[in-house]
Length: 81
Image (cartoon, rainbow, N blue to C red; front, side, top):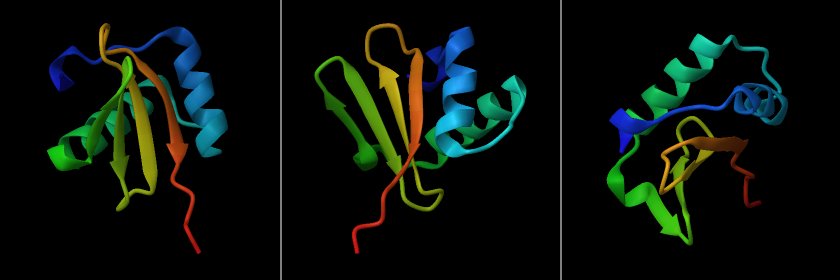
């Protein structure tokens, strides 16, 4: 899956907005690839047409379309307190 990851123009702005960052396109792509590579497979979950990759170390959940492998968004994982 990781080698097929792709992005739309809109996703860069969406990720920066949701993560409250101001990364360049290449910084976002490097971050996403690093998180996907560093996350154990047991934290990859397929629900419906999407993969959800949860990485608690980075406190990020990445949503990827399972058909096109397009990154849809990245969210901060909310702490359950």
